[in-house]
Image (cartoon, rainbow, N blue to C red; front, side, top):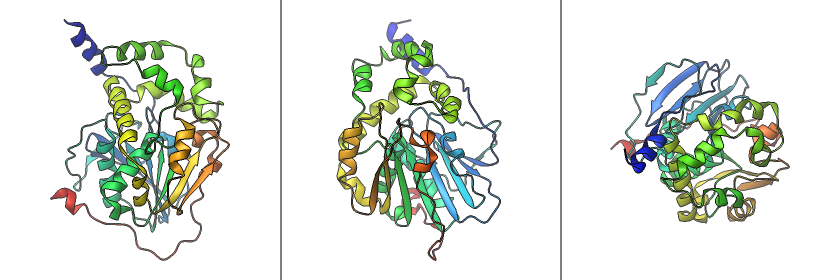
Length: 319
């Protein structure tokens, strides 16, 4: 077997999941990802849609939105394991085919659009993204701004237009290609997490100790990691500040320390957004603001204006 074939086989070799949580609700297959709708015990006043980041899973959000009147809808991006014990995955009647390749921001934006068009039932809808998940949200808003007209957006430690990876990460991956990626992946996954966790993950918290050791088994194969990084860099270079025009209102959360993304570039991009988007520079010690301290997440409004649930259709996509 040629070295090129061996490399491809390593990147396509299945990665077994190592983390899951109990989940009560419905799970739908959408494109090459999935959408989970958690059961709630009271009439929904808020719908929160969570879009996880690179090498994460949707459990990033499960402890932050636990109110009985919050309908929590969680995306699993394409190429990622569903972090649920023994799920029964249903086929949604509203699901339509997605042309964009799996592992791309465009594919996951299409999953989000189908979710937003068909699942929220509450009068107030928030979409909360972290890191790469923020690019997914912004891409979705550019594709279908009409679906975002009454939506609140939270962009946490976000991948943004004209953003960059942190210099440490750029130096690490600059020489990488499809031949050398398996070597780097093997090096990182075989190294004890204590050797890199303080640098990239910041101050340990209980939730970080639960989730962070499993980041390299969140994906179904290592090729997803490669596709995510290459596509993410292309997206940041090809999008500009006009992307903010399609986010009606929301909050951008900036960590005090970030060694995954370039904080200065993130802040420079954020400052090109319009006045209806608040920029909050937090005291979070890492890229993972929610896991550092949940109090930085904007409170869901206690009093809601009279509104009807957002239930547009994806007729244009389905045609």
